[in-house]
Image (cartoon, rainbow, N blue to C red; front, side):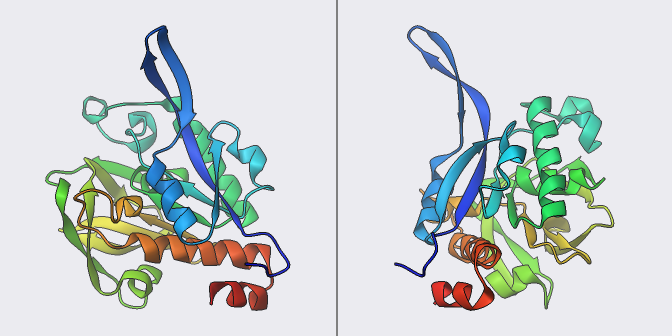
Length: 243
């Protein structure tokens, strides 16, 4: 495929974890494979960008994905400290700074699960603990706001993965909630900014993976691909690429 320009690069914001090896614990920076697979499937070139260095790579990527993971620090999220798990404050700080820089520079971004929560907290939003939203097999149904971006992408309702113990309490005035499940906010979009940003409380990267009942992945990652192409190319070039 040749359109006179390289295929857009999407930075998948990776984070540190420990892998136990026979010789001891090995610090690793990485991300779950399904994010890479989904982006490749829609024609993007995925690039893993370490969270602590990602802000210095915004001139390299055409869009970003914020991935799932542990809870945000209670000091940032407003959640009761005893109800948070797998805290990594350095990751929180790096991703929040990245979101603010991406917004300033207009870099398209898709936040998945924890990624949605980072988007909200970066602009002063708060989180809360939720029950019955960890349903890895059946998932749950979300309803979308008519006329919203997420409604255009997945329709008035869709079954999505449900793997979160926390959710948005107050999204802040920056964000407009546009999807819900049992009264819980499941998607956010900028309320007035033209920044191409979208957060979803589910895991679209798991569409088609194992027994997860969720087919939203292609629509969401294709949207990000289109936004990345628009940022890199002229609208006419992006339209030719998308078709």
